[in-house]
Each structure stands twice: as C-alpha cells, then as structure tokens.
Length: 423
Image 1 (cartoon, rainbow, N blue to C red):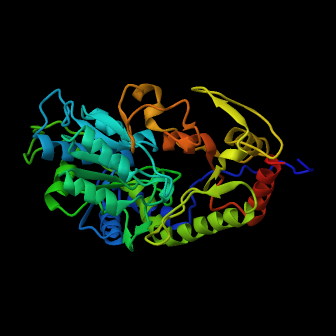
Image 2: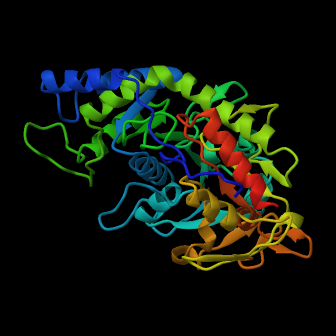
Image 3: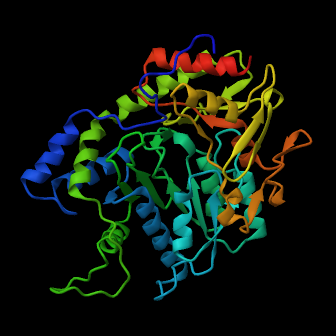
C-alpha cells in the first residue's frame, strides 16, 4: 500500500469521548452515598433530556433496549389489554418493524410474544420504506403497532410513516437510540412516535457507558414505566406485587456520566459532521456515495459515516453466515476488501447492519417490500433492480471509522487506503 504504515494507536469506529464533568457527578453519587437507582443525577438528566427532546417526561432506564421493551409492552397493553401471567402483551400479534437495524429494535417484540414482520428499506435515508409499510397494511390490515428506527443517526421519512400509522390506527414506537440530537423539521427525533426511546450505550453520540431513556408526553405512561422498571412494586409498606416487573432502572452513578455528557452533545455532533464531510470530499471521484439523508427536512447527528459502492464498481464478493470472501479486480472493490484493508492498518470499520429478515433466527418471519411479500435474500440485486433494498445496501455498504477523536491526518490515511482498494 505504497509505504503506508499501520496506525500505532487503533483508530476506532466510535468510542466514548469523556470531558471530566462525568467523574465529578459520579463522585457526588459516591460521597452522598446515592449509589442505587435514585438520586440527584437521575432526576437531573430526566429533566434535561425531556427539555432537550421537547417532551414532557423522560424516564431513565438501564439501557436503550429496556426502554424499547417497556415501550412495546405499554403499546401492547394499550392495544390488546393487560398482560396475562405467562403471556406477553402482544400475545401472537404481528408487529411491523424496521428491517435494517440492530436486533435490539425488535427483540422486545419477541419478549412480549409478538411476531415481527420486517419492512424493507428505502435508498433515500436507508430507513423504513413508507411504500413497503403501506403494502404491509394491505397484506396485514389487522396490525396496530409499528416499531421504527433511525439508522446511524439519520431520521427516516417521518411524515409519511406517521400518516400511514394514523390512517390504519396504529401506534408507533420510535427507536431513536442512534439518533439523539438529530432533527426532522427542526424537531428532535424521539418525539414523533407514541413512545420514544434513546440510548446511552458506550459508542453512542453521548454515553453513560450504558443506559437509556423512555420518552413520553403522558404522566400516566411515565409512571407506569417507572413502576415496571423497579419490579412493579405496589404502593404498600411491604413488597406487594400485582404485575410482572423488571430491574430496569438506571443507576445514579451511570446517570452521573450521562449528566456530565449532556452539555457536549452539540460539540460531538459537530465533530461527527466534520468527519462525514471530510469523507464526502476525500472520496469524491471514487464510484461510491456516502449514507444519504433528506437535507431539506432533516439534520442527522452523523453518528456513523457510511459509504455504498456503485453496483458497477463491485468486485465479486460472497458472504456466509460468519465468513466473507472476495476476488480483487482492477478498478473495483467491495466492503470485504475495504474492511480487511482497514483492519490490516489498525483501523476499525464495520459492515452495514445485516437486515433482520436475513438473520437465521428470523428467516421464517415475513418480509415486505414495496412490491409485496417476499424473501429475496441471496440475490438482492436482480436484472438491474433491487428486489430487496436492505440486502443490497448491506451487500455494497460499510461503516467507516467515525470516532470523534480520530485526527484529520488519520482520516486522510483512511481515505487514501480506500482509494488504493479501487486501484
């Protein structure tokens, strides 16, 4: 690779960026002995996040996944009645879910006994395709719940999805785990669904090392989630239980980390955006495009910078469930070659999220494209047109190193390595 040397220190995909205030608030929890799931840090971040997002109530939980779980349980009980012992709130009902996302978006559907039906992706934002969603309602008109994610910090087609949900009297659980700080028509993601969820996992735009937040405008729903997240204890002087509960409340120590991170959200977003723009400029001239967004209506948080290779510039590549192979070709490349090259030089990239309908555990679940029901997994790109948009993006796309501590010089080397993959 022309004398390029591997990075001495690894260039990561996305890691926490700490500032010092975090340890101050953690230490306050220690000194005051508020080390459990109550305390000033929790109260303060619930207040600050609600104000930032623009909702009335925020409930601090142990993870983004626990937030999604309780949101989905809440939606299931609103739609189908109170949970019966031994049965989830969804109890066999189908739920329309984003297909190209992390499994945490939809795993809680299965916790509650629901059956995910996966909705294909669209090319404009790499999120749920409203046309495929409308087609899904034609096939399954009885469905009343949609779980939608904003991929890599980019808002999806919110207006269209909300209009379809309203038309079919369906509730929306909005997974904004990756998109905290992103806006759609100048409003924060996380408030467009009936229930919203964000994450403070270690690699997110701001972090608590773990943690998440449930978002709502309903005091009743906020109180219900608080109750469920603390083992569903009733208001009695002893431990009285009438419902199944969970140990899902956030620790006051973790909340101290989040509290110290909140003031730096905009700074982190600006750093991530600068990384995206440098990639966009540096990769100009190659047969690739950056992950797209609706510049007219939305502003992503640019959590991860991604790229997709033009179809005609793809070398031969094959993937199994755990391994991938490629055949190098002059003037062409593929995600496998680029990711392996970056790894050789001590930089971390990652494949695009593999669509959920192609995961072994969900291969019997239905998958809906804008053309109807189908499972076009192995031949995503057939006769010059995408039959399965999510699998096509997975096949041709990759996540680039997007750590906001990556230097301009390090990013320039990564860009040079990508250029060399196409030589």
